[in-house]
Length: 324
Length: 282
Image 1 (cartoon, rainbow over the protein chains, first blue to last red):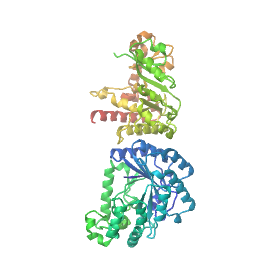
Image 2: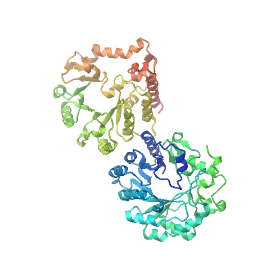
Image 3: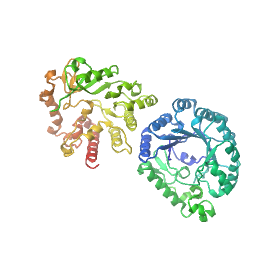
Image 4: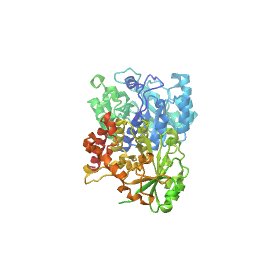
C-alpha cells in the first residue's frame, strides 16, 4: 500500500519525526491538487491497487481533506488515513458530518499518539475529541524513539474510547544527513525487553500489535518471538522495503528516512510495480555488501532465508554517496 | 437522406404535428421531464431533453423517476462537492450528460472529476470566447491518455468516434452535432413554428421559408448552402485555416482566435493526430 501526502504542513513537532528532513526541504505551502489526486487514483487503479494511505504532515490540514477521502471512496478505494488526530473544531465537524458513518472496512484512521506526558495538554484534548468521534474507524500508532517508552497509556486510551484493538508500532529511524531522535542500535535489546513487559496488559485486553519496518529479529529471544507471534496475530515480519511515498508535488521516494535519496517524479513511471521495483533495486544498491545493521547479519541464516532484512537501510547509508 | 431530428422547446402543438420523428426538447427546468417523455414518445421518439440551467450541478434535485429519460443538462459549475457527492449514486443510475461552460476555469477540473467518477460530461464553448488552449490540451490528454477508464467527455468522444476510417485525411466532422447544432442532422423549430438550421440562426431570426411540413427539404435552401459555403470560405481567401490539419475538426470556428495566438492550430492539430492514432493504430 503506497502513501500519498496531502500536505507537508504539520501541527506537531515530534523529536523523532522521520519526515522532518523531507518537510524541511519542502515548501509547506505545497498541497496536493485535485488533478494530481485524480492522476494518482488512476495510477493506483490501473495498477490494481485498491488501497490508498493518506498522510502528511497532518493530512486533515488539506483544505479538501474530506472531499478527497469521499472522492477516493466513490472510486472504490479503501482509504487509510494517518493522522495526529489534532484538528480544529471546524475540520473535525466537517469530517464528522461526512465520514463518521462510513464502513470501517472502507475508511480507517491510524492515529499516531504521543505519550500525553510528552505532549501539550491542549494537543491531547484535541486528540481525545477526534478519538471520540471516529473511535470505530480508528486504530492507534506509536513511534518508539527511546528505550524507556510506555504503552500502558495507549492501552488505557484504546479501552476508554473503544478504539480498534490494535497498535502499530513504528521505530524512529535515523534520517541520513539530519539530526532526529531515534533508537540506537545498542538500545535494541533494552527496547525488546521493554516491549515484552507490556505483553500481559496487551494480551489481557486482546490488543494486537503490528511491527512497522526496520525491526531486527535477533533482538528478541525465541520466547519473546513466540509471544510476538501471538500479539501480532501471526503477522510477524522483520522487513525493510520501499514504502513508496508520493509528495504533493508529485515526487516519489522510497520511504521518509530515504526521502532525500533518488527522489523521482511520478511521471517517470507507468505503474506502481515499476516504482516499487525501482526503489527495491535502489535499496539493494544502497545496502551494497552491507547485509544488515549488526555485524552478525552477514552470517545470519534468517537473513539469507529472507525472514529478517537486518534492520532499516537508513542505518547503513553514508549519505554523501547517495544525495542526488 | 435521413430525416432531420427536430430540436424544439416543449410545445405539444409542435410535437403533435409530427409522426415517427426524433425530437430533442429544450427546457429550462425539470418541471415536466416525465410528461415530456410521455408526450414525445406517444407518436415520436425522444432523443434527449436538454435542460439549460444557470445554476450548479450540486443544486439539482435529481429524481429517480428520470431513469428512462435521456437528459443533457447544462450547468454553470459543479457547486459544493460534498452536496454533489451525496447525489453521485443516483446520478450514475440516470442517463445524464452534463455540460459545463469553459469560460469558468474551474470547470476544466469539474469535468475531469465527473469523468473520473464515471459520469458522462462535456464542455461548451461560448461564441467568440478566447480559450485557454493549454487547459483544453490538458483535458484532451486526460481524455486520451489517462491510465484508468473514465466516462466520455464531449465533444472529444464524438470527434474521436465519428470518422471515415478509410479516408481520415479527407474526412471532416462537425462536433456541433453533440450540441444538437449540426445543420446536417438537426433542424430547429421554435414555439411559433419558425424553422432554422442552428441555434445561432434562430436567435438572429434567420428562418427557413419552407413550412413545417417540408422540413426535410432544408438542405435545398439558400441558408443551408450558405452554411456549407461558409465552411470553405477560408480556402478561397488562403486563410491560415486552409492549411491547418485541425480544420477537419474545427471547421474554422476559431479563426477569430488566430489574431492573438496559434493556440487553436496547435490544439486541433494535436486532436486530429490523436484521432488518427486512436483510429488507425490502436
